[in-house]
Structures are given as C-alpha cells and as structure tokens.
Length: 191
Image (cartoon, rainbow, N blue to C red):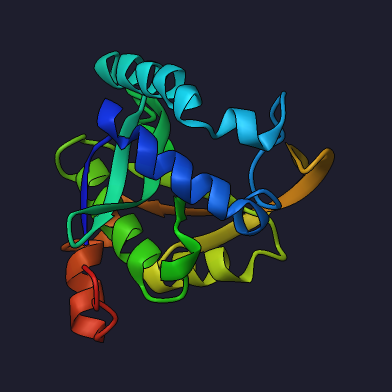
C-alpha cells in the first residue's frame, strides 16, 4: 500500500470504483448536486483533478491516491490546510469496498498524517465522522486519533444535516509517527 499524487490518468479506475461502490460510499459522503453516476463518471474526474491540483499547488490541500500493489484503490486528502499559528488540516478518505476492513484505510491515514506532520510541517489534523460509521471510527481509533466532541447537524450527507464526531491528533501525540506505531502494534499489514 502506498500514497502518491492523484493523476489525470486515474479517471478510469476512480470512476469504476466509485460507480461500483455507490451503495457503500454514498451514505457517508457530503450531498452534492447532480446524479451520482454523473458526478462519478470518467468525465467528472477532470474538473475534480484540476481543482485538487490547483489547491495542492496553492498549499491549501494535499491530495493523494491510495494504491495497493500499484493499482488505484481509493483516495485520501488533507484539506483546508491552514498555515501561520494554527498549522492544521482535516483528513478525508475512502477505499474500495473490496479492501474495506483489511487495514488499507488505516495505513493510508497513518502515512498521510506522518506526511502532514513531517514534510508539510502541520501541527494538528482533524477528522469528522458520522457516529454510525463504525468502519471509519475503527480506522481513526487504530491510527490513534482522540475524540474531541460532537458537531450537531454539521454536514449535509445524503440529503440531511447529520451529526459528526470530531477527532484530532497533534504532532506531539504522533510521537515517532503513526506508521511506526502501527508496525509496533502489529496492525501494519499494509503500512
């Protein structure tokens, strides 16, 4: 498992996974205009990739493809990067339903957070998750995030304002890195 920058040529695999995994992904993702099939078609990747690339060049986000054995397997983004005295970002991720529960998302979070704290010089990474998203809650727990609170009616998901739990980690809490922590704990199947 590895992270790499998102590429224009990811369109086919990105679309294939997103269309196939609609039932698995749609219930957790923010509401967006237009039908799912249109928003996740190969054609839809170009404007998304362009936006991610532009925001990345401006230092406002760090977008990565998650790969397993060199194949596109999902996406992870550190977004809303703020510098100056805050030095923080949020993290969001998804993986193919075929890989869910196998440690890929946990390893991806570990690698992205390590990158955020080391190379990107951030101090804090936050994640928000719906309380009923057990899989994502397990990812954050295994990675070592701590729960900070509940945001009521925080985000429009599946057409309604949904509560989200807020989790966070600071560079001090990461110690020598999340990947190293996963390896020591024996949870680093993919890291």
